[in-house]
Length: 238
Image (cartoon, rainbow, N blue to C red; front, side, top):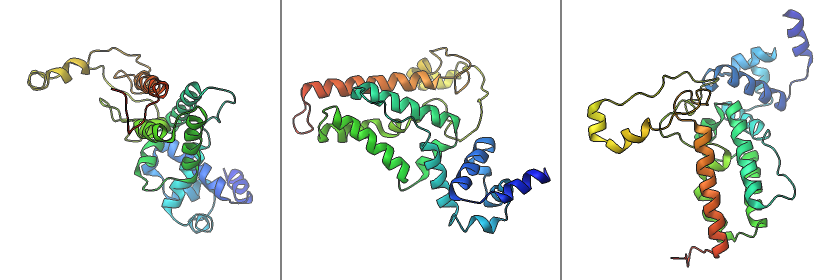
């Protein structure tokens, strides 16, 4: 251990090294457990050494987000806009599933980081290169929302949004209490309607990977149809 710490101390400290270590710590124990003190300990330095490279916790979090976004696969040359967009979004989703804290970290920010802006710029560029108008592309980005970055709010399970790391243990869905079913019959009907893979991201509840791709494909099919119809926000087809 002493030899390992000595090696860490001999390795020059840099912003990239700090961000990589912070991501690893958040992956292991959750973002709520990350502090400048335990990050410094993991890097084998005193906490003040971090502040020579990172001004504060907010800047650290922004760098961690950019580190994660950098793992998203680059665009595949030659693909049409629809499969290209699907591939990138599903790649973004896989990255965020590897880093369960990252989606909530992205949502919590009031300004986008440079890596997020670059990613969104490339998504918009793919749509524009596919012939979609500026008008349609504007509304497409609103429709996609956070799904463009690979995540969306789960209707029946919020464990991912809580930033938990690792597989989620959950009990199989059970019938809601009679008073709930009586008051909200349609919600009760669908809440336990589908049996999904127990190895899904949210355990034995809704398979959010399946639901995510289902919604994404609905959106992409609708976008393609609007594009073929020459849709504009000023004169939408009836």
